[in-house]
Image 1 (tube, rainbow, N blue to C red):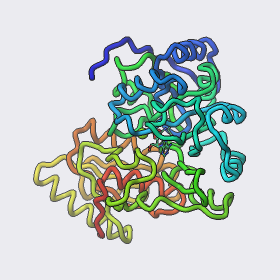
Image 2: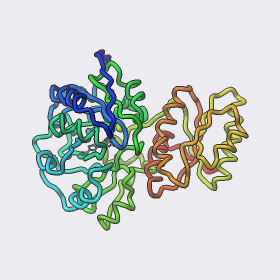
Image 3: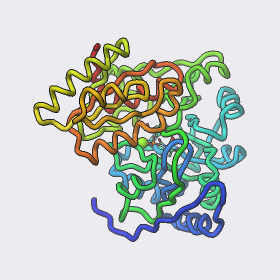
Image 4: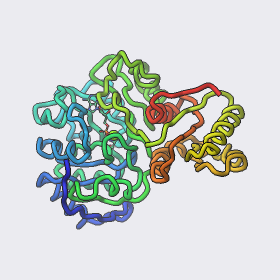
Length: 357
Ligand code: TXA
Ligand code: MG
């Protein structure tokens, strides 16, 4: 479907709120329009969560299958009651610990939330973001914004406004450019309708952090190493998300061996005339640059602080697309802490193609 409209692009600095711009965005949303806005995780594509037409427009703009439910964003704890029919004890605890912040929880939905927003489900995903521009826009829109990540379905989530514009120009009413995004991977999703609560998508709020608050958390078994016979509990997790145009392979094992193996393979592919990309870290980037100078080599960040890697991963995948890279090699990361979120996104980008170095 081709949609052509005039997309306004405005800048809002989180630390210097522009009330006039926020009001304008709020008005568009209240009238059923679609506005992309920054959050602390990735840019979101917002519409009035209680208006079925707005949700339909979001699916159309993204080219997203309509069975893939949206997350409803709120900006006040007391607003939760209107959209859920019950608040489980586990959700109360998690909200106290992590809201506002990069955590989404699944609740039984109330009648106020249309099935267009929940992809036909009787449950609703809710998030209370900490980003001040996001909060201001949600408030201006009336309190409830349905927002998936602001990318075309199947592309990496946008961590810079220019990627939102790349995917959405002419398809939505407004893009709010809020500059850099602090986290870079989507929120952690926890299903609080089951006991013990179940982690459906790893993110900045790690399994360890959830465990500290709840005592016990289970994990969707399809989440990391994707048993394809089982359907993931979060419908969106079944799609080959975050897919760059190049073929991605992840190498596991001792770092020195991994680097050696990637150098050999990348060198051979460069010699064969292929465009090669390497996802490196600050610890290994020099070695690659010395050994395979023809490849496009990008350090995602440092292994001493894996949050830096989470922040840059999607940007790197998009840059490889822009450079028309055909073959991508990546080092693996430990699946603990934020590493679980990094590996979850990388595994999807790689279509679960992992090799031992
Ligand atoms: O960080 C984020 O969560 C970002 C920003 C914009 O807030 N949003 C985001 O939305 O990542 P999206 O649509 O790209 O991912 C939403 C995920 C999908 O995998 C979807 O299937 C799942 O949440 N989801 C939504 N409602 C659900 C429900 N009722 N039950 C299970 N999974 C649900
Ligand atoms: Mg998404």
